[in-house]
Picture 1 (cartoon, helix red, strand yellow):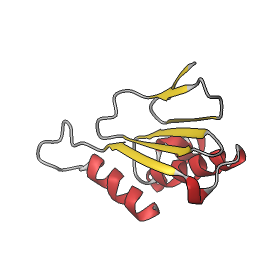
Picture 2 (tube, rainbow, N blue to C red):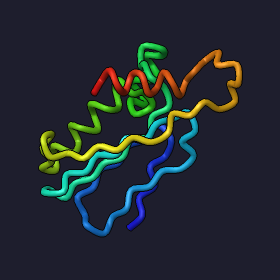
Picture 3 (cartoon, rainbow, N blue to C red):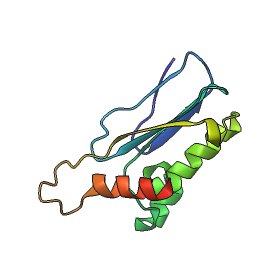
Length: 118
């Protein structure tokens, strides 16, 4: 079954037929986790680096932010039997769009906080 992960969303599955997919990353980042032994996969599509930018929004949508979404992605895969030492991690996205002057650098900031967390 195809499971679409929207913007500011996260999904985890341990069903062999499930395919996790997301679209339109742009400056957002998609983090994919896969444990080949437990056969557990997870996908997070986050928009912004730091939940302190908007505490109320972070409470309602923790997957919108790297610092709150990434730890939750790991914890959810552990619930399905994944182990940190076996996880294969892939990261995509983080481009600079609609900001030719580099004023906001959202993609770059998203990637920098990801590196810091890892």
